[in-house]
Image 1 (cartoon, rainbow, N blue to C red):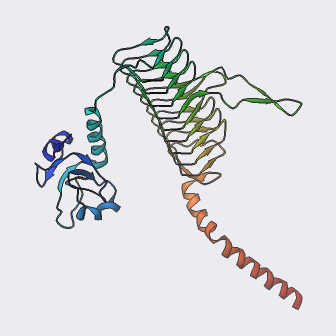
Image 2: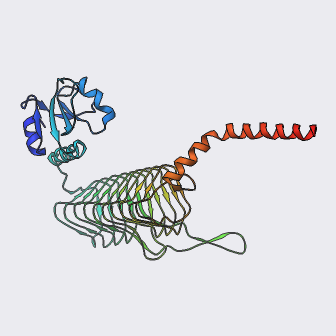
Length: 346
């Protein structure tokens, strides 16, 4: 679809600087911007590209100060990143939405399906499943018995949802993710092998949760593994049995959360973070990439780094010494040698 700068500015409640009639039909990054596309600048380090970009329209913040003239049309908004998100959402809504149950899908007779749904070919919908209005289930999805899929939720190809799990409204689950696989529960026996502990709980995803590709959310041993409203998980994340993730928490790829750990609301978790089991993380905590959490974090809003993780300020101070450890060791060895020589003389 094609939009003029004027229409975009009206939708975003922005202010135009340049040609209001210039047209765009796609989006591009500011560095490789092309004619007929719209780009944006939210990070100051990309500001230099504004003066060389070939993009026809660029979104910038209202307080952005130009250093020289630009060839593109500018639209000034309160927050360029949020404005782009709103614009892409509008573009997404214009795309045709698939509806209907494909003749090669298999839906058990006891399942209940709502209005305006889509179930693609080779999808399986189990016994007593409830698929609510406007949900979309793409090809090769497995939905086990007694599962509920909420309104307007989107389940992409290859997702597996085991029995008894609950998917809220407006959720998005990307390809290859498994919801409700068994938790890692094994009891050691005297013979040094292990007895499997049946995992009889389920997984609950509240509304507006998005889960990336190839994640694994384990069912609870008893009770529920719970992903609260608004949580966003990146690709390749492991969430173990009986974990609870608080609302609006975001988590980057390759993070692993051990069993029964509780994360608070509005936390921000970097990539490759590891959480030991049975700990609690307070609301608003920020965890740097590759950190290892071996104990609870009780202070709201605390920023932690390192493995084992500790406070950001202490980590920065300590890092000064981490980097100098080879030099400090060399100095210590030199001093030790000097002391030994002095002892020999005396």
